[in-house]
Each structure stands twice: as C-alpha cells, then as structure tokens.
Image 1: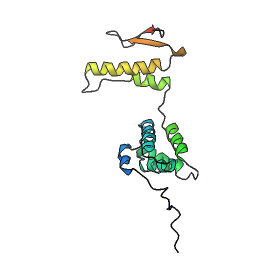
Image 2: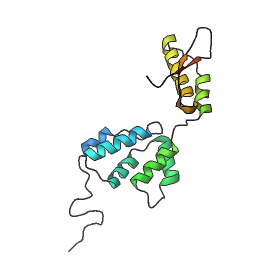
Image 3: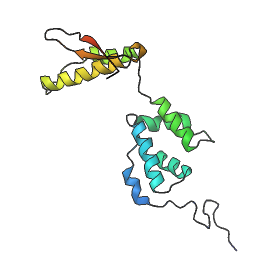
Image 4: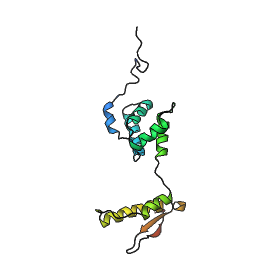
Length: 162
C-alpha cells in the first residue's frame, strides 16, 4: 500500500476552494499594502480560505520592491505565518507621516504641464490640509485658505463642536 504525499490530506483540507476568486485580489506592491491585505482578508473569508492558504496567495501576488524585501528578509524565516507576514510588509512599507516629509511634498509641488490651474489648486490644497492638519497639536482642525498672490495659506481655527 502506498501512502499519499504528506502535503495531500485525504479529507481535502489543503484544497483551495473558490479559486475563481483569486482574480479579485490585486498584486501586492509597495503602494497598496493596506488595500491588498484588506482585500485578501475579505476575499479569503468569502472563499473560506485558511490563513496558510492566504499566505501562499500573498506570496504569489508579490511584485517589485515588496518581492525584493520578501526575498531579502522574510524568505528564510521558518516560522512565518500570515499575520507575521502582513505585519512585516505593512510596517516596512508604511507611508511616512512626518511633518517634514508632508511639508516637503507641499512646498515642492509644481503645476504639471497638462494640469489645469483648478486641478493644481485642488491638489495643493489637499497637500496643505494633509501637511498641516495631520501634525497640529491638540487635534485642532483649521480651515486653510489660499489668497491670491500669496503662496502661504491663511489658517482659521474651526470649532469641532458643530
């Protein structure tokens, strides 16, 4: 009598069900780590996939800098599981949230060649809001107003009671 290979279980526990759902999961890049893992967990719960199966799927979806990071840092870790994998990837590719980083993006913004003035103003206003509101003390919120002929915005405190 021949025994089955150790990776094959008679009860089918290692069989990946609902494989058509794999196409719903994007590739894992350095720019979409949060979206990737939330999608993987959501589709995994719908597909009734186990954590080890989701780890295999995540490894198959690696691209670019995330693949390089995995191969250099995580590929040789013997006790890696889905949760440790997610934590390592998310922590390594976490978007920088420092004031200096946000301010540098804001202060160095230029209007792109094909960008309208209105689109540029919306983009720079978003950068200003992220730069200032994310880093102000006491959780205060400010209305940021750009005046004509003035590069630096005026800040008006907004009451959080309304």
